[in-house]
Length: 331
Image 1: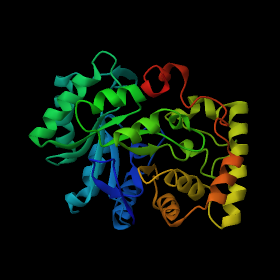
Image 2: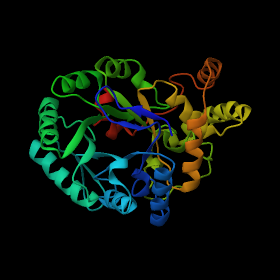
Image 3: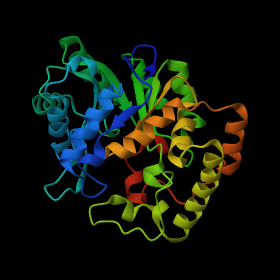
Image 4: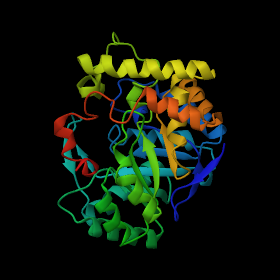
């Protein structure tokens, strides 16, 4: 597995990372034994970057990761944790809290659930509008100094917030959605990150399954799958987005790869400072995703992909309107 560095100051990580969210939450039921086996397969394949959040399954995802790392060399894993999302016992989203005292509390619980004495990259999941970003990063910087976290990351924030945060303490990377169907970062956010020496860990590289090549219009979603409320998966939007995927699939077939592999490789090809996170929940899907790491795209390939899915071609917003209120990157 090739490696990349998260920004100028972050750790060296595998060129593809594994996002664990779907193993515990938001995409419907998952098999826990298969989830652990998938993490093991990722580690055995050289994947070092493992991304989780303390609110994924209300702590379940961190406990699952602890189990997956049992008996493994902790120092060979780069654990990235998002914090700050508040949830009720019914799973409802209640807002975000990044007060310094809350950050310390969230961290204490994550360290215990993960069974580790430090977290490699720690980041607020979303911007807390009630707490200045300078105060949030200052609190995180104190935890770096104390040795509880190694690097500070951010998630789903805009260019101005990146600059304000970086003025307080080096930021290793920005975790943000980036795919052929979600290219909003290219105008301002990605240039700002590069100017500041901040890497990008890109999630949603398959647009939550739309670009996987495995989605069908007739697929039925479980009650716990948030895609049932996502605008891109509704009615005519879904038809339009799957037509775009079909166009990508034809290019993939011509190269002898899968649609998912081509979509992941496209993200990786946008810069050495970008690390795609794949959300594989099974060993079979992981193996397919890892195949993208072997794929090198030519200038002609990239031009053909851009023609098949031009910037702005996606139908529907990536989140429902109420969820967009918490995305500083959309403002």
